[in-house]
Length: 252
Image (cartoon, rainbow, N blue to C red; front, side, top):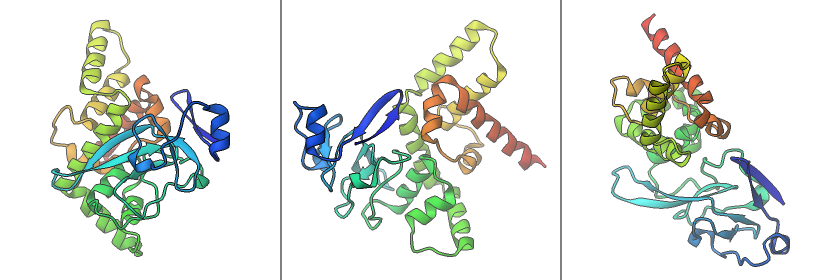
């Protein structure tokens, strides 16, 4: 049995049905994880058992089609990828927001896959290599990744994926506005916290600014640890500093 702690709650990965029944005697796991519902326990492809923590849908590059994605302690999986396998034997994922499975040859547009990786915290070059595994030249990968990040359609996708992650953590436009109001009402607050909220608002797309492209270019996504701290404003402060330093660097 393995586990991952998320928001002070333990989520388990059981080795087999016997071990699962010791802890969950009244639950029958779903045989096909692709058909499981959010919150249900499902068998992995190698007969381990885990729980579906989240179900959401990814839109294609045109925004008119979507594909079901399930998130478990093993990672995130696009259900339409018939050759993708959820393997409990590989253990819990370091970052459950990243796509897992071996198959990268699927119907989901590569630009959307790239955007999802970036939003989940993967660097642009690494995200490109994971999306286009046949690319080998470091110079080519760097140039291609930069070109993708400059495309308006890709920037929009990254923004959409970041919004999904933020909203799952409770960082919605209403939350941000409420925090602004709290700070304004209290009168005495650290300036860094206000700038942190401002950064979160921009990343969430609450305010449309001319520097949106620049912010996406330097944005490296949230790590699981950062997501745990967002509500306290700790990591938001760091994000604000990164943007500030980048802006100053551009002025030199």
